[in-house]
Image (tube, rainbow, N blue to C red; front, side, top):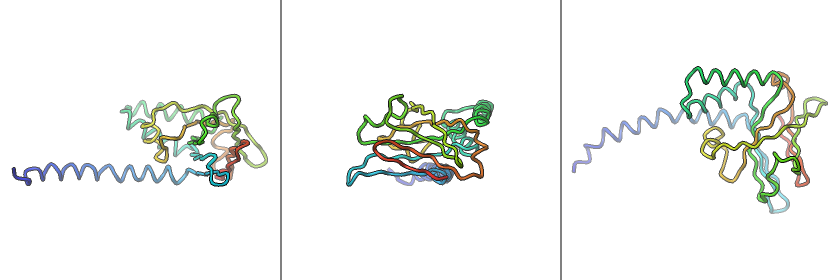
Length: 186
């Protein structure tokens, strides 16, 4: 069999792969650029790890665009999803939280009796976050948030502050419990 017969097929497949890779790298870079991570240890023992991504207007549009691409949304559906998200941003701000704790008993931020509290600190004001667990499948979370790993849990954190109040402002997300705390300064 002549191996040169397969050369056109190999070249066309490699060209297709090269066309989508820069787009994915750009998406990954944008998500990483706005996300902040912290790890906490007690001696050599890791107590928790967290990454926070602020879902501002630009990132929300980017993530919904990626989700629409993956799920095959029509342009109308994408625009509808973006408009709904931006309407919600008038009164609330949203963050995605990737969280890992070696002890699964402490990975319960969405439960009413959780040891964790999460706050948005804006100036002299502190707002407690409403936490919802993201039940999306691992593959979907990894496609939307490239830093997400199989050991982590995804959470959506909502604060009763309009997204516009956070734009061009310094603010902090404080994740705190008896295991320790993490401060994410944006």
